[in-house]
Image (cartoon, rainbow, N blue to C red):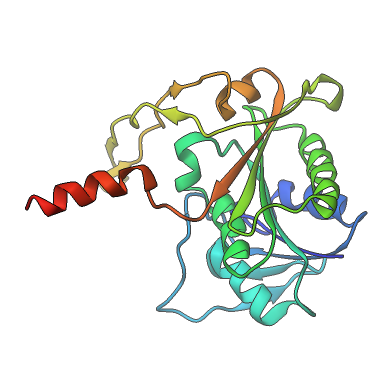
Length: 248
């Protein structure tokens, strides 16, 4: 089995190191990731500049691009034969609810799926971010299960693991995405030269935390697995929109 590993925290992040080492127990692993932190890059591609690679001493490959760039380049040019799966992570922090729209971790997995491969994204959810080994162990367990029970071709799995020791994890729950309140206001300040600058404000607090959501599962100590589809069509609105268009 061959697995392509990527992330959005950068090629030197602790999460990708632990994930690569753990998955190497199961498969031949190629690790290709951004040469810097690209959190929040979503599905962006680099279109106006060339991509360059740098092979590190540990065998990982650093790319001066986004997570999506890394997966696309790896599958098309860097892999020795097409991998069997793309695994993105372990992200330093949760990717739940609305946050998945911005996540470079999720986007890397999505790019694997766009190119026809099974893909999962895995994140460690918590504040101190200590137990990467727990997240890696559950990722390994889930991938072993996917070998027997593959996911649908239009989906990826978004996995969020509580930052807890293995013996404190309550189990695994299949969940839907929760939602947040709107983000806080921008932070306005000045740089050392007195010029006005802005920082993104913190994300809004959880709004929909029903007991079937990813937010709820992780808060209760469960590993959350949410199937995500790449089709953004709002099918329930198609007939209503058609009726509205006909009245124009």
